[in-house]
Image: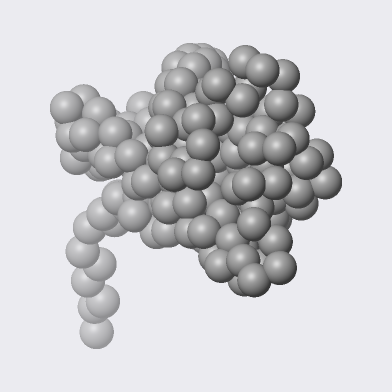
Length: 180
């Protein structure tokens, strides 16, 4: 039992390290390229604090959402180690399920953040052009957009956790006969 706990903990640690690097790289690339208003990377290089703040909150928010999906992956690994015969999950199937769970979490993070920013932009477009204000370096706009992204991530993270947990394969307990 102790060995199982140590292996599961080590697996969770390694998965977290790999995913943190992956999520930072991928989220940064996706959102830098997805901005239609201006070149975010050039603005960061110029020292635009508003853009830097928004990008940093996007990274944090995507990480929070993805972290909620890690729980189910760790549960599947724990099930595989603790009940290998009953779980019927081979190592290949476990790897595919892990990739699917993390991919779903990542997809939901990207969709959530994109939709949130676009929806907020449409809600305020008549009196505030967020993209233009960010490009000018308006820190207040950067902070408001950052808060919008963070709030959305906090709420959606729980939904991602629920979906991910629901998709964890459960072991079969067999058939139970009731005798008269």
